[in-house]
Amino acid sequence: MELFYREKGEGDKTIIIVHGLYGASDNWLSVSRELEKDFRVILVDQRNHGQSPHSNEHNYKAMADDLFELMQKLSIPRATLMGHSMGGKTVMRFCLEHPEMVEKMIVVDIAPKSYGSFSNYAEVTADHSKIIKALSAINPQHYSDRHEIDDALKKDFPQKRLRGFLMKNLQRTKERNYKWQINLQVLKDNMQEIMDGFSDLNPSSEKKMPETIFIKGEKSPYIHDDDSMAVNRFFPGSQIVSIPNAGHWIHAEQPKLFLKTVKYFLEV
Image (cartoon, rainbow, N blue to C red; front, side, top):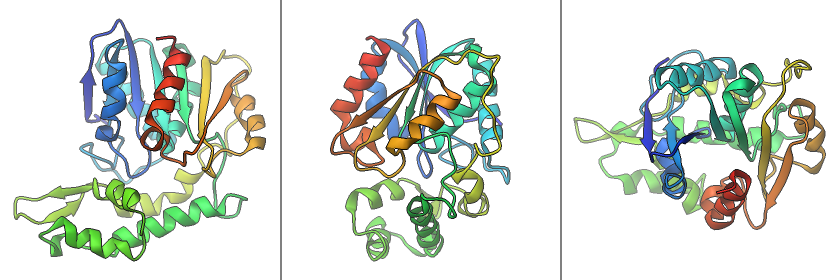
C-alpha cells in the first residue's frame, strides 16, 4: 500500500517515525522539528489512519510491508525507526524481517507481547474498546461544529488532552460537516490482532538485531518491569528507559525529557 508521508529535514541519515493507534503523522511534527536539524525525517500515516488509504487488512505483517514499500519508493536502504504504541509494534515487526535496513530502533511505550483481553493487561484492551465504541456512536456528519462533538465525547472522556487527540481524526467534508478519517470498523474488527501481533512469532537466532531502546512512561500500563524478558528475547541487549510523570503519550506529556532521551540515544 502506498502510504501518505511527510518529509522534513535534509540530514545525511534518515529517521522514520510511525504513529500509534488513532494517531497520524502530524502528531509528531513537534518532535520532527527538533530532529530535522540533524536528520532527514519521514513521518508516515499508517493504513486506515490519517491520509493513507483504507483497507480491510490491518495487521503488523501488512503494516511492516507498507513500511518496506515506502523505503523502497524513497530509495532509503537503511534508516533509524521510531514507533509509538501500534507504530512501535510495526517497526519491531519490520526490524525482525529486515534488520539489515534498520540503523537503530526506538520503541515508545509498547512491548513485543500480547495485550489481549485474557491477559494481565485487560485494562489496556478495555480502554481501546471504550474508545472505539464511543467514536462509533458519534456520527460526525450530524454536527457542524467541533465544539458540539467535543461536548458529546465529554461523558466518556473527561480528559481534555485525550479528547483533543481523538478529535484530530475529524475531517471537514465538502458539505461543511465532518467525518472520521480513521477506519473505525476495520480497527474494531482487527482489535485482537492490534493488541497482539507477537504471540505467534519466534525471535531469530540468525539475524543480528540493531541497537534498540524502549522508552516507557512511568505512569503507563503498557511496559511493566517484567517485560524486560520479552524485550530481550526479541531484541537482545536493548535498553528500557522510564520517563517520569508520563503516561502512554510520552512525547506530548514530557516532550523535553523525551527528546533528550532520543537525542542521547542517537548521539546528536
